[in-house]
Image 1 (cartoon, one colour):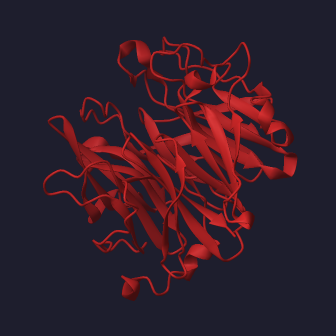
Image 2 (cartoon, one colour; image 1 turned 90 degrees about the vertical axis):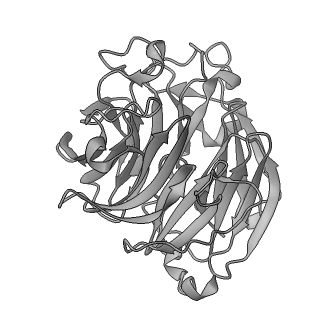
Image 3 (cartoon, helix red, strand yellow; image 1 turned 90 degrees about the horizontal axis):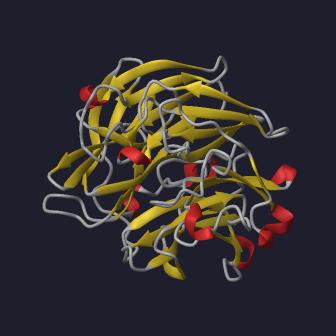
Length: 390
């Protein structure tokens, strides 16, 4: 595999990644780095490391919850435990040997097992972190007032210190805005709101939204109404003026209504520029994406086949409004698509069905050409990945 990865050094000036979406570090981390990869068979979970310089894999350096999501900020690696509602923090400075666990709960408000944290953004400058709480299946503890939690980095052991209240979509009857991905750019934090109605089998209650708040004064929240239903991932560029958002619509039903797909969003003026490509044009539901800029997007398009799914990553041009070549696929499940400098990372998770690529981490050039078909193997199917400095 080394022949096509020999020049993998562009990974050293890139972004932190995650499941369903990616959290950018606007200051490139110092070299060298690790790719920290969680993997799961939904019974057990592991944390492994991939060195992008040597391509060496350290498998299972720790056992983690089967439902863990990795995010990285500098030398710190943050693992969200969705099952128990907790946070594990590693430091690459001590070779990830002394992780510390903290609860993601608040006494009398949200129990950890009901929180179901989805994403974290660490604001080291101000000594706090933000965590989206999605709420576990059937739980009514997480509502609009608890969906965005704030942590004091100096008192992580105390759990949630406060909340930033969010609103719920007008047609959503469950009082939960379904807060998922977090991205920060400049002084602003952006929160992707899926606006799914749990009282109607998690079907979209209209199109989704983006909540925007100031990191320096996170008390006032404004909202950008999206065009797509059930937004699943967004990417923001260094200028902070524009984003690309992918939406899945009624992915559980596998229906293509033309009400989801890929859209450009004008963050500066707070408005969607509309769907550049709909689910019907793409031939499936967008489960996740990342982009090199506002025009060039890598999107995982999911097609339901009976009770299973075929997932294929395509190069998409949002300006020409065209779906280009298949970059990788088909796969059973794609937890993450991430652009790392000049490289593209695709995680193939789940159990491969007949005719599908096997689970693993696929890595190649982010040029729109097909990725190498041999993955890095972590024994278990990968579920999330983050770029951590060391």
